[in-house]
Image: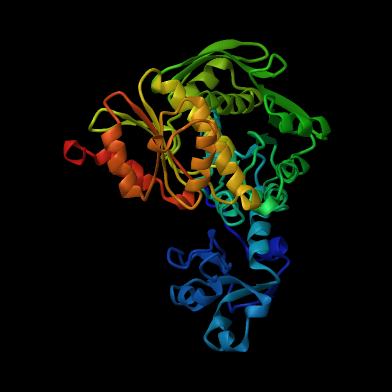
Length: 471
């Protein structure tokens, strides 16, 4: 693998920064924002995050032997210079977060490989994993790790790009207007996916119209000869596609979709469907339950098809996919009931999709929903939680186990659909687990879901470990 070296001239060109030169030339083999794990041959960019400001760790990285730093012009002072910064290449910029993105944009332009960017209200991470698995059948593929999908994570992923890669799949997150525009400006994608458009991040965006507009920012920076891949079953996506100034490819179950699914068969831990491409048809098995997983697979298949892969290669990629931890993982407890671990995150759209999966899988057995708060919903939070209660009760969920600030709102919604107090339990996590173990019998099903901040994975762990002594 060829190491990509950064010269001082390249760093200045990328950031437009002002150089305070050191005594001798120094090239850099990487870029880091982490003072704890930085190597002495890397450039340190001092960014201010949610919890820490990298400027407070400049002296630490210098002591480690780092010989290049990018710092905010306003935070640089003669006091810092007096502490030995004169022996280090120091680049002054107006905004270090902006500079980090500019460095990533410069690095992206070194490579001609296709970049695929994925955003949407639900399914981003699963679609990213499926897309990378499909492209991995033909190319060495760089992909976003974990949840590195913001103004820090996207650049850090791009910095991992080297000449051995044949494609890159990047997830773009968003919680305020302009964020997708900036991230896609950095990435300059060849293909872009918007998985769907729903009521997520309303706290920062205010309305579904604003969500649609914010997600649509991705289209602005797709290359002129690139393609935007949209959900043909999603009303907002269809509206967006009608105004897109790029070629549009639709996926979905509609007969009008370019990449389509038919003959969907739901199984306990898998989903089988027939994938219809414009020129081929093939049976595919997803190693995860849930009809919404099919839409994720179709979006990923569209990338594969547009990238020149045949149906067999796309099938192999989908079938090599394994669910991400906390995202629709089906587990069997020691007591014989099944746990759907979808604890990683939640918004109204993904909550409804997960409930549909629970009801489908439980069949004639009992099904329980363990729901934590859905966060970042702004002024609509109470109403949207009530809606989930209504949806769960109307869908045939047998009992609700609720925790968090909005538990009363979910209860209110469920009661409006005829659920009784006996079937709605509110409590802390340990209390809910005790009640669940008493309620669930072998072959019953329980779905555990809530926003990242709700910490619902704790309930999953306790349910997995529960035995007869807890019943």
